[in-house]
Image (cartoon, rainbow, N blue to C red):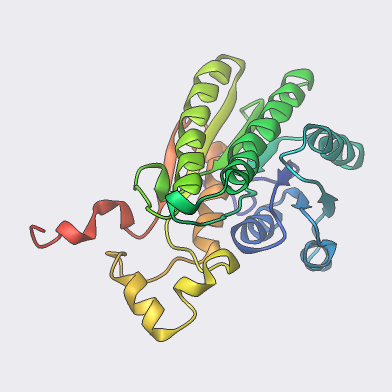
Length: 268
């Protein structure tokens, strides 16, 4: 029997939780019964709005400003979260950025910043999560000692010219996640990834905001529609729940078939 609140009583920290996919996950986790920490980078307003929405619906939420690429700020974020909620059961390392450029014009700063946030940021958050999980007593609320969900992308497997820094960061996330999952599985810590395809979020607004742009985008999606943050959020709830207790080291692609190479549907 599946529970309507599969994360009831658990505490979940979501980085990059103030917009897009992260906001969708925060709302879904709260609806599934979790207390939620909503991380943001610079502007507290959107995170506070989501936290207020969750509280008005009867849930628990707090906001946490931090740059996930900064080790000291990550540690402080976890300390504040645990001071408020007592422990951490789930961490979603979702924060990510793009700084696109043709390879020959790409500045070192553009390369480094994307890797710092998208890969090093996930490493720092996952490392702090593992340390916390190992130091905590197990809880009857979850069969696992802790759960980590890394946010990857279809571009961990699909090359993406003009976005080499982003694709490299997501390829790194894929093998970091698998290697970490292998290492900590004996401690009953589960680590997985979600790889979204085209999702309607502010980071890719130019790809869907006009009829012409949307038409071009949908040509890459066999299922014939753009994804919504809720599509990813539902997968995240399942991965964080005991319904997925035998799942670790796996990437779930939420992409409407984008990884099926639609250009070859008619034999190329």
